[in-house]
Amino acid sequence: MPLTRDRIIGHDLERLAFRFTMLSDGDVVQCQISDAAMDELAGMQGTESSARQAQFTSLRETIERIASDLYDEAPRFKGYVVRIFIRHLAR
Image (tube, rainbow, N blue to C red; front, side):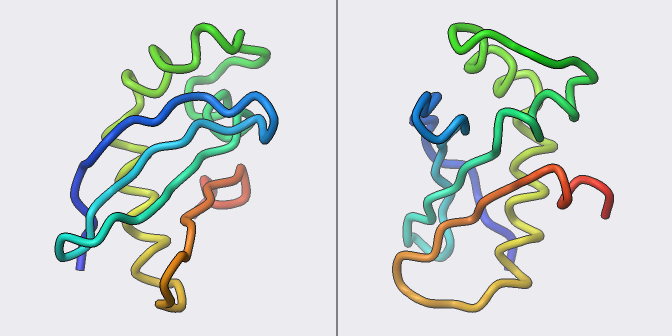
């Protein structure tokens, strides 16, 4: 079942990832995409932390589709976090 759009949390400088949530039957699913994966999708590198939200917004549909596909393939357990890395983009 595809995930549906929920909230943008923001850039996590400690993890070098952008965090957001999606919904699965009303349950919140934590998601994140690595900075490197977002830059790869955007065709650039070294995006400043302050520009990550704008970058995420411009790529949001693609990122959410990837997150939904990964969730469909993942084991289901409470607290599972969908994490998108560069290796997931070549699918």
